[in-house]
Length: 262
Image 1 (spheres, one colour):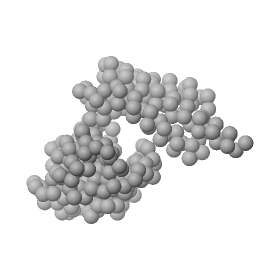
Image 2: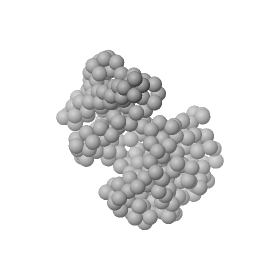
Image 3: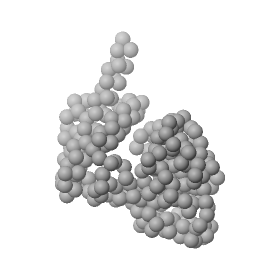
Image 4: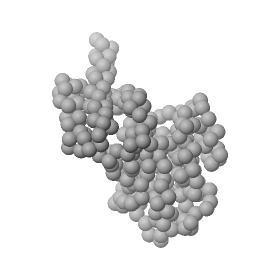
């Protein structure tokens, strides 16, 4: 991929994981078409995801699903360059962020990792509160000094040194409406419950009662979700539902294990 305004002293690979993302991946790929390399790791798409991806890169790989952390690390391991930019199919790199990244990589001395702020949308509305902004996460990093955690959900990049901050934004078009939020809630609560179970966590009455209530209170009041109008209320309620669902599912997993042990 060419067309860099600034010459990268350190070449960049963009890594993307995907499954059935034909509706969203092209805009994502267009936003990073300036990168030196793009790696797309697909996990069994049945739509045109891979066909669309191959219009932008010949580095399209089929890797069975391993969980978010291991899947993203698999993409990193397939890169030819040490400098990595990780983005998701529902995200777009703004021109300002792209220019900032190219400027960073053109310097002689740079940090080992950079966090990036995200502007997240629910439908057409940008959410400025609820803990959804600035939602900084490490996205640009040197893979020799940083890597993804093994978490199957809520994965993160772990760096072995200081992390600098980018100013440019990622645009995050995560949900077209409340329906996809509820669908993702069910999926993420499954993954979260499984992860907690493997870690030896157990469900208590407190987890099913106080935790969901506090999750709503924190999102709607402490994180000023009420300033985002009805969307803020929807997000706060679904945050509480996610908290309840993951602990209820953890309880079910524990009960099944107890029955097997009898």
